[in-house]
Length: 74
Image (tube, rainbow, N blue to C red; front, side, top):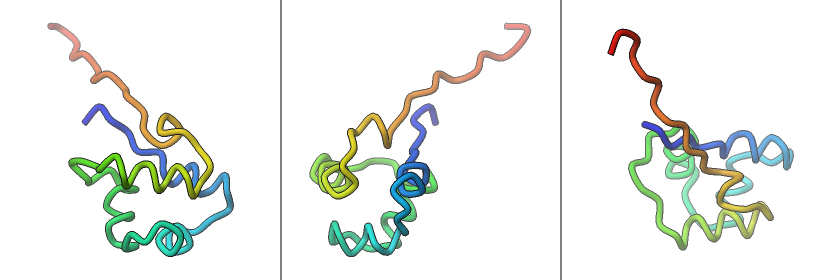
């Protein structure tokens, strides 16, 4: 997938654990872990807003677009 989730980076910058974020935004640590590992297929804007508010960051700090690498010879 071309969307990269940098939640672990932002958490590390804030010296915060996933459980701390979970408690602060009222989202289970398991659901945040799915998001953090890039396994989530979607995120609600309300969830993204709550995460950004708690971490005092912008959505672009958490989500990044990387175009897929082009295969050689094509």
